[in-house]
Length: 572
Image (tube, helix red, strand yellow):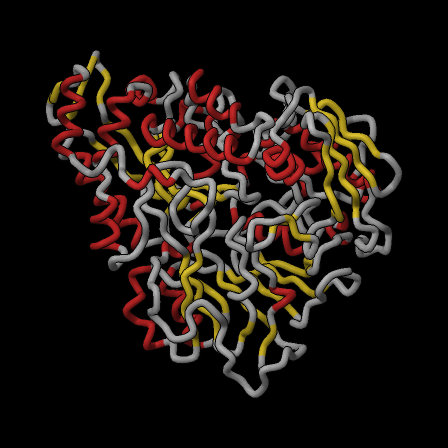
């Protein structure tokens, strides 16, 4: 699971450009050709800042995940159909007992590190040891692991042991739902070359500090040994990051000579780069959708990823201005949600495209775990009713601001900068909340800064909007690391025994249909309780690629937002 940023805040346009949904076959040949460079424009004012395969809480983003996935293979990989695939996963098989207490992962011996050494069970266990250390709330390490709480980590994990070089046996402390544990637990593991990274075998604190020091230093020698399709070559801060093919990769070897990620100062700068051809893969913001005629050599395609979009509320008691106590009231969260004109945002800002979203899994892309009964919003846009809900709960207008017991419904919302469309959404929210007596001040910061607030001292922020939401990288959209009491990603400080019980029910062994019902019950409660979040429309990213760049859309995986440049090629 990862925080997502809506790259360029692009909106869905079903057939805006010819070739949508598949790459153009323009070019002198329809057969894959070797050579060329793909230049990928990054979301504006956004940079990769964490290269270690296991994500920290402060760097858990889709962009960092995409960069890591170039060079490191996950233990398990789920394909576009949501099923376990061995194309880009180290394992060959995962078996488990009926009780849901023991899982055996068999490694495919074909996979090797770029130094020729095989990927072994020792590398898997080393990765787990780091995950476990970073999930220990009682130890003050240099960084915390982003997956704490997801897949039962660390409380449901009893032991991880090697049974030979190609087999890992994982035992749980209690019976667990097998699919949940495989996808959200075991699926988090990225094997790490122990012989390269294990600098302090008997000192985990020193090891975690070392990882933190080199996490944003991809030129360090530890990054020279990879098992993925690409190897880092060079970077110029706030300019570009260059990767070259890993000649020893045991999967589909790259046809391109080079892959460059390019920093963009603004959406207009990215548009000019696409227009001039200096970038052949990028993104388009909603504000420039009317200018696609200026890109005759490019193809525009909407891409949805499995997840949902939201604004984060700080419900912690230490939140500035006592706002945490206010947000802790369901009536306040209901009023905030009823001040979100999702249909209006879609119509006036997103050119009529996008999807209304009211729970922890958006309706696009479709997914069997989404409760079909949630087609009706529990809190549709209605500022008048929202104000009435506040007044019924004892809030009164004082000098233009709803006030109760000396606490004002007035806050600062830190929002990610760089997107005109999201700026317009922020301003619309500000105006509609004002109709309810809720005053929102907007402070724009870079994306990386905004998401870092969520892992900082809760006394330093009130509301966050990083122009995105949450992505499910395994296809099992449970909410343990988001909404369980005390979970690592529960930066809003939400706590509910009912929510804890509903989430835990999705983790227990059960037949498939019962698992679905358990998931539906959790989603319904999350829709009605608004657990430290306010839902906003689901918006796809709009990918633009040059007509002679092939396979970039065909190979995109909506589960986790995976891209596979090793399967791209450029026709001459």
